[in-house]
Image (cartoon, rainbow over all chains, first blue to last red; front, side):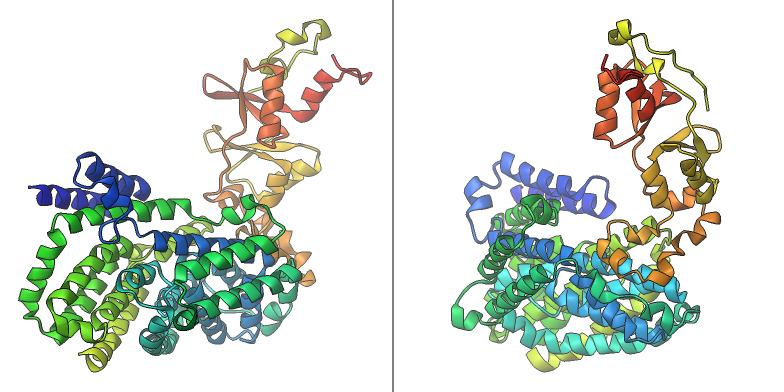
Length: 427
Length: 167
C-alpha cells in the first residue's frame, strides 16, 4: 500500500512538472514534504542516506560550478570567444553558424547547457542582425549543439553529474566513454546542419565587414581577473582529470575552484551568488527525496526485476532498451527527475545481472539516451525551454513544431549512432 | 489621458498634501507609436512617458532612460561586454531603426511594472516610490484607474519652494 502511495506521489509530481501547472520547485518540494510528513521517509532517509537521500555531492558540484561561472561571466570572456569565432567565418553564413555551434558545444562541455545558451544567445542575435540571418533557427541549432556537447563530460549536463555520483564514475571515465561518440555525433550534426538549416542560411545579406568591425577584445572588462579566473579554471580541470592521482571527488575540486574564484574577484557575494540558480538546487533536493521514497519502498527493486525478466538478463537487449527508452522519455519530460529515478534502478539491474557490471555500459546507455533524447522536442531539456523563452522575449517566437522539425532528426540520428556504439563497445 | 492640474502648494499645509495635489497631465505614447516619437518627447524635456494601449488604458510608465533603452537592440540589454565590442561605425547608427520600430515591439515582453502611487499617498510616500522604483515620473491611480502623473520636478518644487528653503 505504501509503495502505491509513493508511486502516486511520484506520478503526481511528474504530472505537475510536465504540465507546468505549478512551479517545478513547488512540485518537487511538495512531493518531498508529503513523503516526509506521512512517515514514508525519515529525516535520516532523506538527508543522511547515500541510497535514498539527497545527493549532497551533486548539489555541491552544481553550486560550485555556478559560482565559478558567476565570477567568470562578467569578465566578458564568453562574448570574446563567440565574436572571435564568428569573425573567422568571414561573413559566410554556414561557416559562421558552424563556428557558433562549435563554441556552444565546447563551452557546454565545461558549463551547464542552460548557462551556455544564455551566454551565446545575445551574441547570436547580434550576428544574425548584422548578416541578415533569421535568429530562431540558429538559436535552435545552438541549443541542439549545447545538449550534444554537454553530454561529453561529467560536468557538462546535470544528468551526467547524477549518474557519476551514483555509479562512482570519474571525469576521465566520461571523457573516455562519452567523448568519442559525442565527437562523432557533433560531426554528424554539423554535417546535417548544412541541409537542415538551408532555408535559414539562405536569407543572409551581410558581408564580412559587418562582422569584422566588431572588437572582441573590447568585450573583456577585467583582463587581470580574466587571467586569474582562467588559471583557476585550469586548476579545476586538472583536479577533475587528475582524480586518479589526487583522489579528490569532483564536488570537492569544484568547491575548491569556487573558493579560489571568490578569493580572486573584487566583486561582492551579491555579484557571484546572483549566478547561482537556487531554484535548481531546491528542485534537485526535492526530487532526490521523492525518488528516495521509491527506493525505500521497494518500487525500484520491483521495476528492476521486471526489466530483467523482460530482457532475460541479456546484456545487449538491456543496453539498447535503456538507451532507447531513456531517449524517448527524455524527449518529452525533464531528464533530471528521470535520471534521478533511473540511477537506483540501473544500480539494481547491475546487482541482479552481474554481466552488466563488467564495463559500466548500462550507465553510458542511460547517459547517452537521457542527454541526447532531450534534443527532440522543445520541452525535452531545460536548455530548450530557456532558448524558447529567450527567443520569444526578443521577438522571435519558436513553436513546438518548428523546434521538432530540427530536433527530431538530430535526436533520431544521434541515437541511431549510439546503438552500434554501445553494442560494439559494451555488449 | 485624464488631466488633473495640481494646486500650488500651501506651505503651511504641506502635511495635508497628497499625491492628488501634485498630479499633472502625463506625457503619453501608445503601443503603436514609433520609438522615435517617444524619444522626441524626451528631447522636449519630459522625464518619462506613460504608455497606453489602444483603449487608452495605461500599460506601463517609462522613465526617460528607459525610453532611450527602447532604441537599443533588445539583445544588448544586460550585456556590457557586447556593447563594448560594438564597433564605431554601427554605434552611431543604432537609433536608425527607431522610426519604424513601435513602442510595443520594442517593449516586447519586457514591460517593467508600472511605477505608481495612490492619489491619497503622502509626499514622503511619493518620494519613497520615486527613489525605490528609480522613477522620475510616477503614475497616480485612484480606484485602480490612472488619473495622471507626478513629475520629480513638481515634487521638488513642492518640497523646495522658490527660495530653496525646505518647507
